[in-house]
Structures are given as C-alpha cells and as structure tokens.
Length: 204
View 1: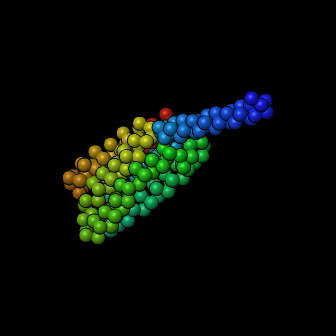
View 2: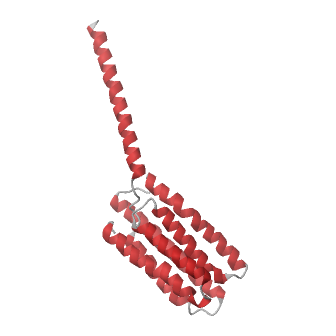
View 3: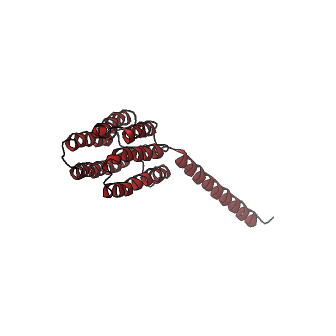
C-alpha cells in the first residue's frame, strides 16, 4: 500500500474513533445530568417564605371580611413567590447548578401545573363566594406541586409536599375557624422546618 495513502487512512480512522468517543462522552454526560437531582432548591429562601406564611396567618385571622382575608393571603403568596424565585436564582448561581439543566426543567414542569390550577380555582371559588374551600384547595395543590417537583430534587422536598398535602386534607373538612391555623402550619411552620433541613444538608 502506498505509504501516503496508509497514513491518510490511519488519520481518518483515528478521527473517526475520536468523534465516536466524543459522542459517547456527550451521551454519558446527558444521561448523568438527566438522572441527577435538582439541588438548587433554596433552603434559607424556604425559611423566609415560611416566615411570610406565619405572618400572613396572624394578619389574616384579624380581618373582618372574606375579601380582606383573601387579599392578605394573596399578597403573602406574591411576596413568598418573589422571595422563592430570588433565592432560587441566587443558589443556582452560587452552586453552579443552572436553571436550564434537565433536572431543573423536570422540576419546573412538575411543579408549575398544580399552581396554575390553584390560581384558576381561587378565582372561581372566590367569585362564587366559596372562600371557606380555599384553604384546603391551596394546601392540597401546593403540596401536590412540591411533592411532584420534589421527585426530581432532594428527599426533604417531596416529604414537605406530602406533609402540606396532609394538612390540605384536614383543611378541606375542618371548621372555618381552623383555616388560618392550618394555612400557617402549611405555608409557615412546615416551610420553615423543611427549609432549615435543606439549608443545613444541601448548601443553603
């Protein structure tokens, strides 16, 4: 065989092997990313969100009308959501776990739909004057969102979702007087407790 042709053949084979190796490495990296957990859930952010929930429970319990009561909880939900997003972005940047990663996308896709359903039901139930059903609906759907998203996160997250869901079951059938206590327990105390666990065990 012509030496020049043989050299070109060897180079071509080497390039082909190199290309296949790079493809395999990319596949392995993608598979590992898809199987990993979303660890950027903010622990200290969850603690602050819980503090907002506890404060809202106290303030809401002192309102004289259903409209004012609802306004307090909606304002608290907006503030807690803002805290959560800011804390999530900060932890993601600090820990080097991008929000565009496969685990983050899976978390978001599982977490978001129950929250959208909760928002729609809030409008419908409040419009029909059925404010007494809102605590149970909120806790059930938020618990569902956290548990579903938590399937792609650290173990404490789905556990918190399950605990909040259980409170939602109680709230759905409990006397109206229990509403703010149960909401404070779910959006307040449980958020604080599990947020502290995530912060200690998973980097803040």
